[in-house]
Amino acid sequence: MDGVRHAEIGSEAFSFLQGIESHRDMASLNAAFRSRIAPYGYDHFIHVAITGPGGCPVEDDLIGVWDPRWQSRYFGKAYGVIDPTVRRATRNPAPFTWNDLRSSQGLTRSQLEFFEDAETYGGHDGLVTPLRSLDGSFGLVTVSGRDIDDSPAVRTALHVMSLYYAGMSKSLRRRAIEDIGGLTPRQRDIVAFIASGYSQRETADRLGLADKTVEQYLAAARIRLNVKTTAQLCVEAVRLGHIQI
Image (cartoon, rainbow, N blue to C red):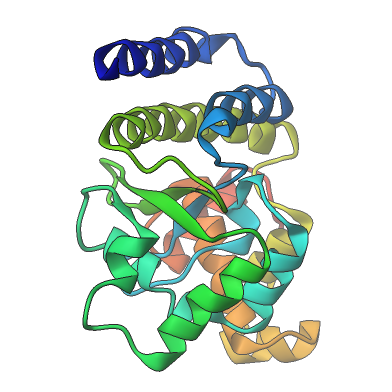
């Protein structure tokens, strides 16, 4: 019986992989991904870029289906600083579950409270697939739910589908970015100030933002234009015509 079930799980995953290139927008891709993971109890998923080892998720680069209240809660409480899934994902490429982390001995009280808070918004447990690109950038895909199938066969299928989902969503996002000019309006404002000689603190004051928020926008802009440093970001933004100074 297990062999039959494993074959069905594998067939579902393979069907998703076969059709991955047919999606032309994120709505279509998200609907297909959700339909494949829902039978196993997973109804939330997020693909996010991370600003390097020890860094934080970038709000501008969130893709997926989740409770929007959790997004507000996550970034409002600055959970990215303590989120143990982010720390683990940037240090170990192997997939893992939230329960894997919760059962470890190294979590702080704040990190345990983070998981408890996440449950309020539908994240009782989840599988995390770390992502590391050839350019050195980091990211992760998390699929989560309340009553999930955590069997090895399902874990494997979700891991493979998450990798393909991440690759296709990155491609679709790149196309969307090209359509809107490469950077979001807020990113263009911030990069323009920096390129004109303002410091990060001065830019934050002028725009009424926190220093950390400006830092996160710059990190997201570097990812979007595929550069390593803020200096390179400014040069590339000018070269591509995204800003004028």
